Length: 374
Image (cartoon, rainbow, N blue to C red):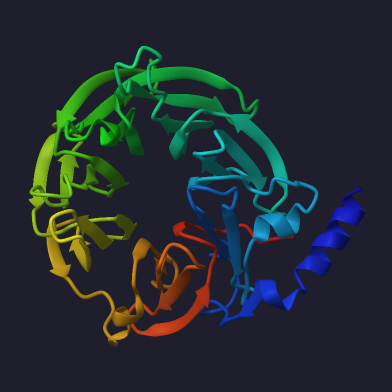
């Protein structure tokens, strides 16, 4: 069967509608270099239309709906509500929120490995041979409203769930520093009573040992190299604005507030934290778009202008940002009108547009890989 699957994949990858040609990575492929990246598209709320794209730096080819091309025998495709993904070991793990499972994919071939049933899975982090998954849990059956969420520990050898830890309401992104896992609790299903805490989990006893008060409706997290975790608050979409904070993991307290820096997504490259924001306000019924680069060592905003050639005006609805740690290239995904294919923009490290390509519906996450595709 493997020869047949390989034959099908080779034919599908030749289809012009699914591929686009772009420049190779600066310096060319070499050992331990970035070989490519995966881009996850959430899809919409009504269909089974999440997709996974792949860009191969060695060939310069961008493959849309890469997962379906590699796995034509899976009739239900990737699933619904692809929300987050992470590479750990030889697998790419994808959290499928609305399909309620975790998809495990071989990063060397793009082939489906397994699906782990998991209710309302949201975000992923990894370490010590385990994948950690945040989950909203479920609403109670007695109509008392949303219940506390949890984080689960999954063994990557057996793909069995080993343990659970209750955290705050509607937990989102996580970060690991030392012996602890930090979890951003949003409370987004409890409007207007948002959660405003970060849960601290001891990863060995796997129990919550502390809560840090930050701001309402927490979302993104990014650890730096100085013992701090950068966390975003989405605010309340009315009077409380989106803001970005730094939390000291030594003192388990907020150590910096960037009160003028809203955040939809963030990515760290060395000492620079790249931020894009696309925040909706219920009073004005409009979205405010912005960008910033933060010096995490000195904890200050370096610039509010990532894109320097004026092409930022082309971006309608930025949803995620990622920086190639090898080349410094900046990638910004644009959901556009959220009803038609999105668009991915590649900028040089100086902020000049290099190329762009159409993606799937509602692009939401980019992950770089150092493993070359077979």
